[in-house]
Image 1: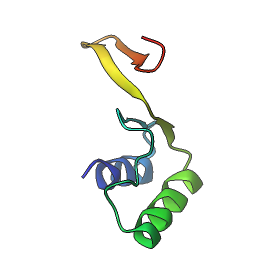
Image 2 (image 1 turned 60 degrees about the vertical axis):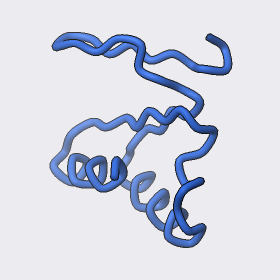
Image 3 (image 1 turned 45 degrees about the vertical axis):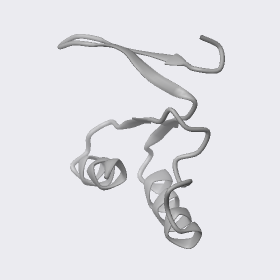
Length: 70
């Protein structure tokens, strides 16, 4: 899952942004488990972009668009 990878990278000092096409990232998780994961990630400084998708990804750039705004 993406949150485990994000957690691992954050603990290594990397800057992390989760890009999720759904309105919330815990929709597929059990509520308590999902809220605990969100708390852990938020404490480590991770950014979450919901209703979004990656438009462009290459060695230099990442372009994310909000799917609600197009």
